[in-house]
Amino acid sequence: MSSDFHDDTALQAPPIAFDNSYARLPPQFFAEQAPTPVSAPKLIKFNEVLARELGLDVDALRLDAAAIFSGNELLPGSQPLAMAYAGHQFGNFVPQLGDGRAILLGEVKDRNGRRRDIQLKGPGPTPFSRRGDGRAALGPVMREYIVSEAMYALGIPTTRALAAVTTGQPVYREEVLPGAVFTRVAASHIRVGTFQFFAARGDTESLKVLADHVIARHYPEIRDRANPYLSLLEAVADRQASLIARWLHVGFIHGVMNTDNMTVSGETIDFGPCAFMDAYDPATVFSSIDRNGRYAYANQPGIGQWNLARLGETLIPLIDPSADTAIDLANTIIKAYGERFQAYWLAGMRAKIGLASEEDGDLDLIQSLLAIMQQQSADFTLVFRRLASLAADEDVSDFAASFQEAQSVTPWLERWRERLVRDPQTPAARAVAMRRVNPAFIPRNHRIEQAIQAAVDDSDFSLFEALLEVLARPYEDQPAFAPYAEPPLPTERVLQTFCGT
Ligand code: AMP
Ligand code: MG
Image (cartoon, rainbow, N blue to C red; front, side, top):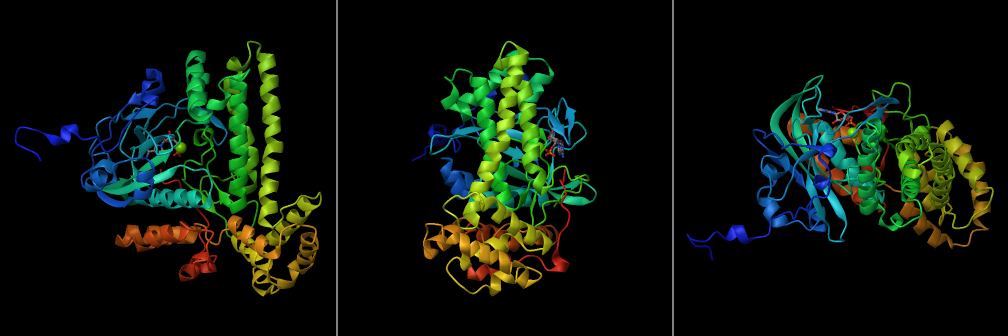
């Protein structure tokens, strides 16, 4: 249909229908910044299912995916910017961090009418880069892709992976690594640290603009409450309590729960040094930079509370004209977070051991199992998955084999069976319900490392693809992928993870 006199493309809808609410906020919220082009972008992965969910024009994007998702080609409607934020890093306050290696391309309304950010990670320097290069290495990009998509499939709120490309350019860390760009999708990239940025400057006016933006975007139901800013703190606390409980239910260790890595939307964000634990030990730490175990597995609920207290502090001037009153109100919510977390955690743990009813002794029953698992170095994921089989089967041999000494768990199993007698579900229904909450497959650290090694050393992405495939259905037995359910052999064990910054 095209003629020499008429350019059809000008009439076509752009492949991404951007509508950028954050870019409409006042200028102190961000720095306008375009991505820096790279020499030889090559597509590793484009998540077409997610692209469709976002309402993007998948066919158009596919044609030019490497250029678009490297930042080489900027689509119409994109208003690239780096967001301003502050944050407590390992407990120390840094008044200005900001997107130093990330650029927000813009926002879209997805098929469900929800606003979603589309952001490039590793697209080159921004005014917030300080001494960093604004780039990302291939390994961390693959890790974020695998783990964020695995979290999604597990049913845990998280940012998503839309695409990954290699840049054709090296990045210089402790070693020279292939460079890559990751495209992240989030309900928003607003963090506790975004509030801290304005609070640290005493800029209450901007803080109010930010809080109103967050309420409109993530918590519209609280807009007309008597004290919406106090309700905002309560709503964020509730989502974080639920989120962190769910991390614990699957053995996830975030690794760097700084306040700039905690969203106000309640999505998991920033998969730097994160990892899932194999053998159960509440003190597990993977991150090479977390030397004191601040962000160890079992510390995560308490750190969540600490971070929420920092959010509460920023909201004081909005909560009440009297600081004393505001502090009292905020403190009540920060304290209640502990009970909320405990309730979410216990409910999820009851489900994991197959209980649909509640009794006072359940907490002790759960803690007793965890204590044996810790003492016997039992694999966290396998124990619960195999317990699901026991709900409708008498043969304990597989389950018991997860413990160093098989008989160590026999008395506990007797207690469990006794408790099940007073629970309403049929054994068959219980087994089904347990398999829905106890995954067979998690992104095991050694598998991620193997996939990264093959890609970095040999440009072989087959392990990466296999991992994405198996982890997309974590609650199903997938016999073809049986080895992926297994813990690492002693020689395969990966004890440390790195931010890769
Ligand atoms: P993160 O460890 O990803 O939470 O990042 C903490 C801060 O360091 C953020 O402000 C990042 O933007 C910044 N940062 C991390 N890596 C780089 C990099 N390679 N170049 C520039 N800034 C970076
Ligand atoms: Mg971060």
